[in-house]
Image (spheres, rainbow, N blue to C red):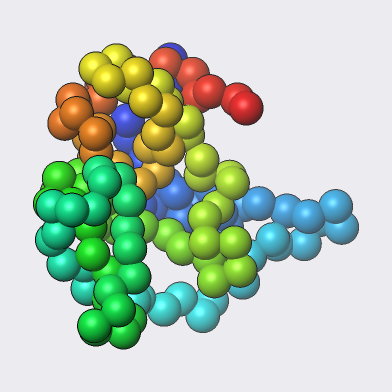
Length: 125
């Protein structure tokens, strides 16, 4: 069983820092950290867990209010792949049975169910 502490930002940063390629070199350049803030506006017409580019305000997004509430505020993003496979933690929600990636959420963005403190092993697809 895994503990939810695995999603602490410093732990995730350390995971990425320790990733090595076949030549033993660091997979990611971590010295040029940049903090980016993204504006997300509530819109009940957007499905939960989805983000839609806002056409009227370029560079901003719309999302269901529940999605905004459920999303982690301290996410790692990669401009090339948008997500880090190393941080992926697929989990089937006990409430709604939807599979979600825990690296993005504080609780289920579909049914609001809290994640257990002791997490089951991640789903491998």
